Image (cartoon, rainbow, N blue to C red):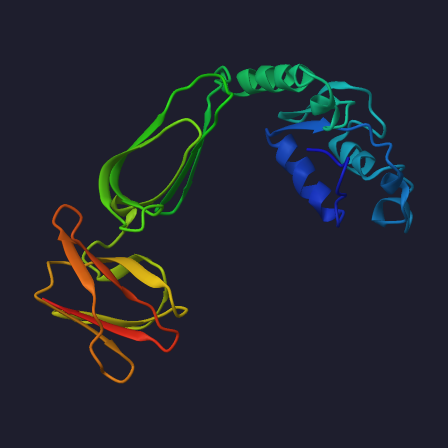
Length: 270
């Protein structure tokens, strides 16, 4: 963390941080704390407080004291490592990031018993969404492979994949059907529209889609079985041309039709 740019809005943030470190957390603080905004009138230097910078309030709460020198300090069950460099200094000159990396590597190994591993990819999971980016000009040129029952959200046909390989310089954005909690519940998994007025019973599932004119809706709908009848109409009940396919492995139906801001009504029966 650093206060070389933004400063903490409230003192209570430091109460939480200090408690977290004392309970075993580790913070690496990087900053010289000498920019002009450290001394603006704010909570850390008024109402009885006289700190030169907000970090001194944090360090005092940790028991390290104000204006500590660079080094690693034990705080309860945790540690705070202070590096007296602004983050921008790591990139203004070549290979200056070694100082930060060596500190983080050492602290990570001490805390976990494991060594830091470097890779050329980022992976983020948020609920059923899998987000992947593979960097070029990195430590290697390896691709990233993810397996599962996946909807490729970057493909307008929303194909179902059992495996997705993301190469160097590419990104992947996937919906993992394996992470759906109730697979017997009819539901829209992915769509280029907003879904309203969902209704479901033992034999049917219906809803209304709304999205701007001159856009095409592609959607994947999870169903308990393949639908025997699909009805797509506008708000007046007029039939709308659509495309439909069924994927047995994922029990999802693909639907494609032209969007309308007034709404498109979809009903699937089985």
